[in-house]
Image (cartoon, rainbow, N blue to C red; front, side):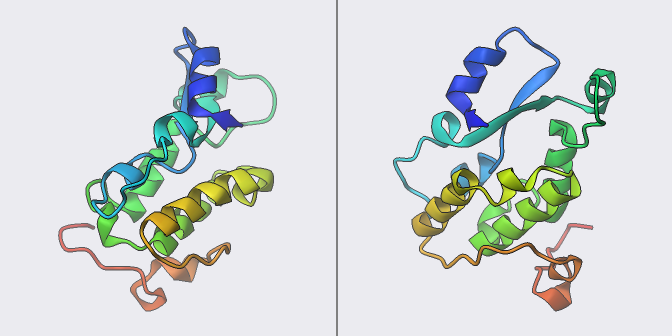
Length: 153
């Protein structure tokens, strides 16, 4: 795990792999309340992962569940693109933790200081509180406080 800028240089020319921002860039860029000097593209925590399941299936060793296309799709189902500002930092955090746990990302990533630091910075930028926790499935229901968005199935 490194920052995006460093991993991008190391990954150059390897089309099957993708340098993924763990905390997606859209949560920094699609909220007018966030105005910080943090360079999320260059400094945000990132990992090199397979681009899609077909690439992951070709890789030797233990099956890899965390692929870029799947992570993006799962997060988009919870928080649609363009609607990031309608969700709290807590909801953004919960969605990321749920997806990362679902994709069997090692706990050293999900509870590591680096990723939690990125979320704390986002919470400060939005002047919101953040509880560091692992959400339960009930979190993502209207009864659990999850928003029901018009036009989203």
